[in-house]
Length: 132
Image 1 (tube, rainbow, N blue to C red):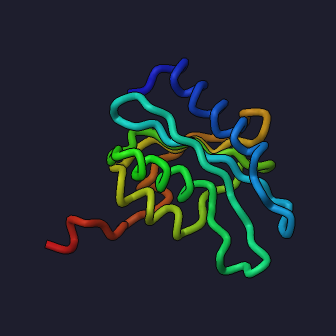
Image 2 (cartoon, rainbow, N blue to C red):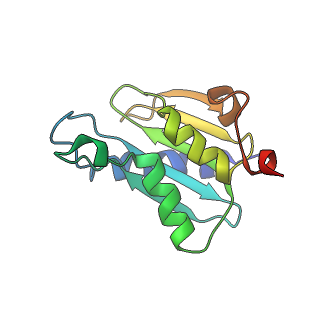
C-alpha cells in the first residue's frame, strides 16, 4: 500500500518529467515515474527520432534509468499524458519484467485520471518465471 503523499509525489514527478519530452513528430508528450521498493523515484520521457523505430517511450526510459542505477524492483508506476493515455504493449512488458501486479496511475497533465494495476493492463503476462 502506498501513502497518498507518495502517490501524489509519483504522479507529480511523472507530470513534471513530461515537460522534457522530445516529441517533435507526434507532439504526444509522455512522462513516466517509477517508485522502487527502497523509495527512490526514477522518471523518464518519450524521445522521438526522425527514424521512428528508434523512438523510446517514457516508461522504458524510466525503467532503464532505474536499472542503470542498480535498482531492480518497482512498486508503483505513474504515466502522465495530455489525455491520461495507457502505456504501449512493449512498455507494459518491460514494466512486468521489474514489477509484480503493482498500482499504475494513468493521469493527464492536471493529475486527473485513473488507477489500475500492471496485470490489468497486461493480463497473462510473460515473465522470467516462465523461462524456468
